[in-house]
Image 1 (cartoon, rainbow, N blue to C red):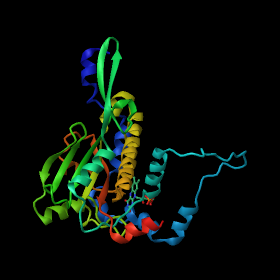
Image 2: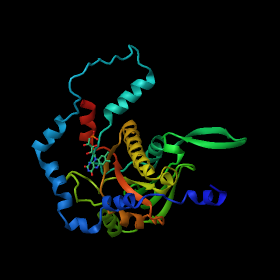
Image 3: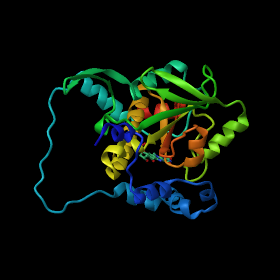
Image 4: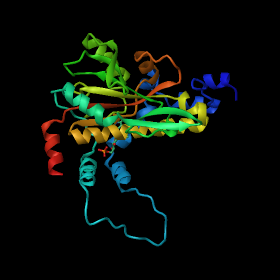
Length: 296
Ligand SMILES: Cc1cc2nc3c(=O)[nH]c(=O)nc-3n(C[C@H](O)[C@H](O)[C@H](O)COP(=O)(O)O)c2cc1C
């Protein structure tokens, strides 16, 4: 491999045609809104107590085998207790208070969710390299995930679409949302109604985080398996966002469906392999929900 091929590698994808086809088939398109089949089973499952019971009671079985009870330490450290509490209180909350989160809480959220945690000096073949460490792991340290944010309600910041810059701890305004109609159009791209639970409260969400992935990044090195790594990483980011929300006692819920290509256009994503995959609505808890949790 010569220097010239190497310098182009980061932008080359090396994904097979079947992986590229797969990516196209998992996207939601505008016409799916008029094709109920795509949402028929989802709606049926969401509204059927029998299905819900089956899902709640289903668990994996290996058959007959020796089993060993797990033991835990008698003493718990402060860190253990804190993580335990954060885990216990993590949940998907689809209703938000009409009072949006403050700019400071938003900053606290980003600090916990996805952040630079330090610096590491590495030596490689007599070269000294500096690597910024992050709270989230990434296969090959490739970090294909990019986080965008739509400010839906926070008053101290302009309404609009931003990219989160993890290195500078800044939000980069891509474009402003000036009118209610524009926000309404954006909610349509987020598929406000299709396949969503009826309790979903888009109007009161403070922000929407859009989890996107630059899918050529992992795959230039790992080929098709890189696609799996990139999708796995989105899951890590989602979970980190859930834990950050739990630690700050704010509400959040992830949503699977949006009109992917329209969101790409909306966020000005130029690379066809930079794909918005999922999103999360975040806001303050409404009082009843907050009480429910404290009773739990
Ligand atoms: C990747 C992902 C996609 C999800 N998509 C939706 C969705 O489209 N609509 C919804 O109401 N909840 C969605 N959820 C939330 C799940 O329904 C929720 O996590 C699950 O019911 C377990 O509940 P809990 O998070 O409160 O523990 C999603 C969660 C994840 C992780």
